[in-house]
Structures are given as C-alpha cells and as structure tokens.
Image (cartoon, rainbow, N blue to C red):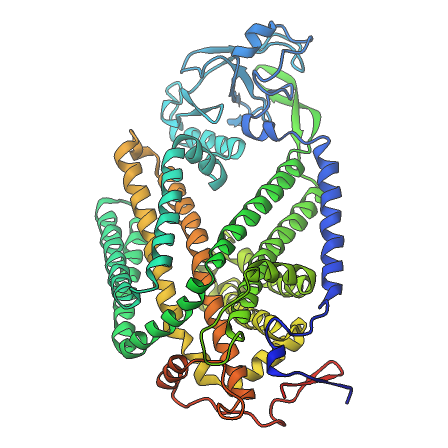
Length: 632
C-alpha cells in the first residue's frame, strides 16, 4: 500500500513536515511567464503607447509631441502648437457615401467649426490639400470629437441618414462609444471623484473590520437593513428613469426596477427565515475575529495582496499596450471627389497579435488568481499556528507568524496555488467570454424556444467556477494544515466536509452576511460617486456614457477593496472550522484534550443539526499517491 507516515496532532501546525508540492505546475507557469516577458520585450522595441492616447495623423506622427520632421511644411514652433487630431471625411458622390479617409487625421491648433478649412502640411500627401469642416467638434482626449447635430447637409433630403453614416464612421475611428475611451475620459475629467471614492471605500472597509470585535450583532442588523433599503432606493430610481425616459430603452429601467423590488422582498424573506441562525452566526464571526485581533499583522495581508495585484495589473497593461501599439505604417490610396490621396495608415491587427493578447489575458487572470490564492494560504497558515498552539487554553503565536507563513507559502506551496489557479483560470475565462458577448442576449431572445448555447453557457461556467473555487479554497486550508499537494488536499477536504456536513453548512449565514457587507459598501460608494458627478459636472445630460462608466469603475474599485478585507475573515473562518474537524477526528477530549475551546464547541453544536462525530482509524485513513496518512 505504500509508505506509512505517522502524524501526531502536534505535527499539524507549524511542526508539520513539509516538502515542495506540485513543482511541475510552478515549472509550467514559469515557462509561459518567461515567454510572455520575452514577447513583451520584443513588442516594446517598436511599441508606441502614446499613439493610443493621442492618435496619429496621416503621416503616422503624433500631434505636437516631437519637433516636426524635415519633410513637413510647418516650422517646429508651429508644430508644437498643433496638439489636436481632427478627422476629415471625404464624400464620394458616385456611391453617395462618406469615407473616413482611412484614419487620415490632421493635426490642428484648435478644433474647427462648421465652414472652417483645414490644410495638409506635406508628407504622405505631397499636394497641398484643403478640407472643409462639415461639422463642429470639441476636444476630448486630444481628439476633435464631432457634434453630429451640426453636420452640414447642404439641404439634402437624406440628412438624417448622412448623420447616422458619419456617426458610425466616427465611432469606428475614435471608438468614442466604447468603455475604454469613456473610462479614460472619466479618469481624466473626474479624477478627484474617483480618488475620493477610493479613499472612502478603504475607510469604510477598515471601520467594518475593526468594529467586528464588539459590534457584530448590531452591525449585522444595520447592514441587513441598509442593504434592503438600498435595493429599494435603486428600484425607485430605476422606476423614475422609466417614467422620464422615452423609447424602447425605458423598458430596461422598468425590468431593472422590478428585479430590484423582487430581490428586496426575497432578501427580507430569507433574513426573517434564517434570523435565529444568523444571530448564532454572529458568534462564529466573533470567534473568527479573535484570530484577527490576536494577530494584528494579518491586516497587512489585504494590503500586500492589493500591492501585488496592482503591480501585476500595471505590468500586464504595459504588455498589452506595447503589443497593441506594435504597428506597421503602410501607404494606402483613398478615392474621393477631390481626387486620389496617398495616406499613411496604422495596421495593428494580425493573427500573431490576437494570439499574444489571448496569452497575456490568460496569464493576467492566472497571476491574479495566484496572488489571491497565496493570500488565502498565508492566512490559513497563520490561523493554523494560532489554533494548534495550546489545547483548550489561551493561544499565542510566534512573533514571526506572518513572515513564516509567507515564507512557507512561497518556499513549499507556490506550486500548489499555481496549480489551483491554472484550474480556475479557464473556467473564469469561459465565464467572461460568454458574459461579455455582445450578441448573447440577442441570440437568446431570437432563438427558437429560447434554446441557445450562449444562454446557458454563462450560468454553467458561473456555477462551475463557484464549485471549483469552493474546493480549491478548502484545499489550500488543508495544505496549510498538513502540507499536502493540491489533489490529495482536495480529496481530504472533500472527505472532511462529507463527514461534517453540519459543520460546513453553518458558514452559509455568515457568508450571506459578508455578501450584504460587500453590497452595502459597493452601493454606497457608487451612489455617492454618481450623485457627486450629477451635482458638480455641468452639461451632464449628454454624457450618459460618462455616468455609466464612472459608476461601473467606482463599483469595481469598491468591490476590489472590500473583497480583500472580507476574504481575510472568510479564510480565517474556513481554517478554524477545518481545524475543528481535524480536532474532533483525532482527539477525544479526555485522554487527548481538544485544541478547540468550549465556546466554539458549544456554538458549533448549537448551529449544527447533528453534532460532529469522531472518526475511527479506518475512516480517516487517506490514500495519497502511494503514501497513507493517518492522524494518530
């Protein structure tokens, strides 16, 4: 049957024998990560990230950034003042269509109005060419964004269709209606609002974390009531938008209001039904809070996570920008009523770049999962030291508990968290692909009997992701306790939860409360940010995209911040409960004293439908790849 390894209870904590686990996953990830670095360095040699922000003119130059090349007809001083990019449109009377001159932007000193003339200045267009502005425009992100309502139609009966045609061309060239362009505009114009809401989210998260020591029950009541009220407030807001809006889009607001009201009723019903278990769950949170308060250094884990994730976002954003701006300048001919123009265009779409973007995106998601999983493992290792420090007494931890946990995570179990992240990332990627599919809702509505793959793929991947994350998080805790690799730790965690279903089920009300905490802080930050934007920004009635982008960005930042703090408590609670299962399995409380304390045992018995049972030696014999592990 293999080699027998005898583990005593004292070897479950810091004294557990550890070896490097899942090394092959670490090697595989390192190869791909090193390849991406080489790929990024190669792309950065010709990458032009500033061209993405400022755009390029018909010569491939960035407006006003550098001294004018010698082949232009403008001086260097004049070139420095030509900082904005304006796009002319050429009307082809033979086809009765507009041409965007294939991204032939012209650098100008200020955005022209209807009737103004703009001249070329040499380069690719050797002849002196004049363009007449057929619309007025204003500066946004160093580009002249046109006002379609000012389009000059010259008494043409098809003016509306021409406006729609030009609007479509502008959207394709500038991508002014997409989320990224709106996000950049929002970050530049409303940076103070975003910064204030970021600080507000951190303060709210800190206040919530430190109030958990003595105010769990009143805090749970306050959060539950606030969450219910906020859903009602947002429901009334959506209902008001339904009354004020016109067109088919108003029914989206109506559907949203009905959904919010229904959710509020369901939430309140669940709250009333589970009120007894929720009150008892407050005591579980208090027991979990003992660990966090006993080891204050654990509060640094969310900050370390945020720093590493922020650095990882910056690195992958740099890699993506460099690859996207790795362009080739080519000449192309444009036909119009004014003649044939030879212009320089940017080509940045090719199969290699698509593959590169996919690899970078996959590695980015995987790296973020690795950082998150490492944080969970560090917390589990720290709580593990605290739990097994002294049987049924006052617990203490070494002064270097957190540093030791970080060292062990990186030294021995980095391969395990990488393997878990590699398994999680394809599922998360599949969910994101189907979630962001622009045709998913349309396909579902138009398909016969509402049966389409897109309809059911997204919820399928969502549930698969939840299941994989549940088992991987518990496997990390078992790895922290016993030092086992991922797959054997997953089997052991599954057996523990099967044997102690009553213990594992008591976390539902607690996580329900944590979900409400997340929702309250996210909704509060988003609502304050949007109200601030509506009160301070002028002419906001034409900037619905700005409002939506600001709300989405603030909500994402708030979710990111509060999740770091909530995950600290969730990982601590999961570790305590799994340690409790091991404790009940290995000890009897008489000859072998329990490491759990009286209040925890009484609370778990009160919350469980059936008390946890001790396992026999045959029941907890676990086969681990040729090595049988027992706990006595």
